[in-house]
Length: 476
Image: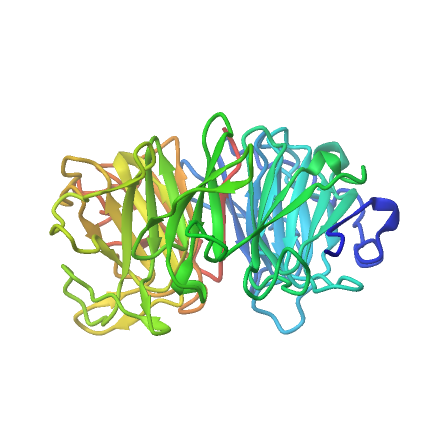
């Protein structure tokens, strides 16, 4: 098998393609806002906008923070000191710039150019290191794909090493920060133990062994037993890091069977998968996992919109899983034996739990409805509680009347409010506000689970109608 991890001194690809960007920008004054949300804007007045997340306003005179030509996806470090921003989406000539925003000074402290695009970058629990998956990174002598290790904090932008994994797309890190799970889209099948009969979609990485010569990347062959992995896309770890629960995308990602599958970390052994209707995104709350996806059959979406009055012909499904027993949970008010509850279709890749048990589920490339009788986009809101929240019954789903892909979801922890960026494809990435119950800040008139002020939902945050992509709060 080809060597998958190369010591720093032997790097052929990466160093010459990474250009570290200088020091802090001239934007060194803080805004004075106590509780901030950053909103990335890749079109027009490009940059990172600062929003007062208590008053829902973007103060006049605040210049956006520079973060590349088309800043999009953002991740805030665990210590809240920095916000990481990738620039390079939906452009013919992407700059692939990766920026480190100093949250205190509200400035671009460092940046570097990646050798390709990324949709997954994660930070170590101590906020000192960033792992960036670049599926199309050129690699001499083998298929493209690499994880870049880049310093954060005081060493922001410093290149620390590179791990070559073919087509590596998504990453998950355990609570201790000493193990990574790397998920590959279309892995290299030319080297043992990976083959066309047993491709490797999952690689277990021990970052601390970088450059020591040890076998720090363990490829896990698929399709070799009844416990086969099937196009995994993410994972969630138990508090003691003994088990990871892997989300197998299955048919929606070109495979066969979507599932939630335990993975024993001590032995790198996949357990028995629990089959679900669809799985591309998930969230864990306590012992319950919420799994979202769009069921496929014969290469096309196949789930009818059971229980919804809509012009859409296919829908997605939200599945509840008890991780303690590895059994499905029947959602309230759902007929026994039916995939339920139904949500929007599309590829689900955004999910967050807001106030009062509202689960916000976002997708891209969903069925768009724009009729006089119905407006429908890619956001669904599910009531996780066992009691009604406003007008939404337990297990109820509401599809808000807003078109477009959902590219950012951020619950506002100090208030019963959730920020959602929707419409980046059409009509154009606006920041919407959803409140969970009566909220004097935005004058929600009734205690409705999805009501927004003044009477219709959603509403625009003041001065935040535009072409935004992502939203993150940066203060504790």
